[in-house]
Length: 444
Ligand SMILES: Cc1ncc(COP(=O)(O)O)c(C=O)c1O
Image (cartoon, rainbow, N blue to C red; front, side, top):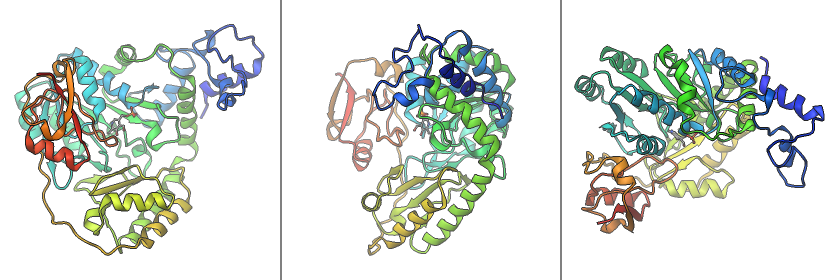
């Protein structure tokens, strides 16, 4: 696969052209530790194209990504999935659609609602032991779609634990009621390349975003916005411009360009190995630990240990992993998530297995309680509350007040309460159990 962005950046770096333009580092090795890569860091000079143009080297590279992902069109974002989520929501807002969202959204959704003044209708997942992940109740989805014809359904799949929703069924439901399906697939960039393609757009979603930087070899900030519905193809770039910097990073764009070559040349073989090694790892550690198997399906390289059910507090297991040279993606008292990628070699799997199996603890099992998140009580819209004056108070004193914005545990940055909602003693208690001590509430 050709790499038009990378090829151009190299040829410019080697051309000896006098750079009478930005960036100020001028592509020179300045002694700054990062200056090795300055030579490839450009701005929109005549032949370098433009992220928001339909022509030029970036558009050509995006067409390569479109072919690899098998979408109607795939666009690059240098502002992560966050910028893609803003763009997707701007597109449906313009069509006047009501946004119905399954509650375990990432904060990127909430900030987009704040910016765009979207007042979502929530669907509460069926939680078992955490608010981060839960099954989507299809009956509740259908009721909402009936109540709000021609709406937009927004779901997060895979979620932070790697659990995936039944996208095909959600697509059928949405399309039956004239709705479009938007998927936050930030964690699912690998899904088209496993032996079975389970990518949301392949399964019929109208729009979806993948953070390339999460699971693929791309720089932080690199993401894709994929279009499954022809109607949006010509509208994405102009909508993304509302939120994007006018100087999107060429290094990030170049990393997506090179990621295309990686996908074309090696990802399938590497993923086949990665799946085999994660299966072996699961089989080994299942002798001592409970591995999370979500109800419907899971993203294969999210390695999620249910610490609580394994008889150890998540926080203790997390500390033990760090002491033994393993940094995890996410941990709370119930779950630990470790992320593999096709770039990990076999040794990484062996090390995780070895460290987990050597952990020295006598299992103690907490009383099993079903996690319950009370239904939200909206007083103000997200935007109204976010732009009011606020004060920060101890969470223990928050009952009866209105959330302004929240310090979400990050990761996973999934809300327990959303700005504009009434704080209750029950919510305050849940927040405390996730280590949140202070909250911002709307000034009285
Ligand atoms: C589920 C989910 N959605 C969206 C985002 C935002 O993605 P990005 O960091 O690429 O902007 C994240 C980031 O952690 C996430 O976990």
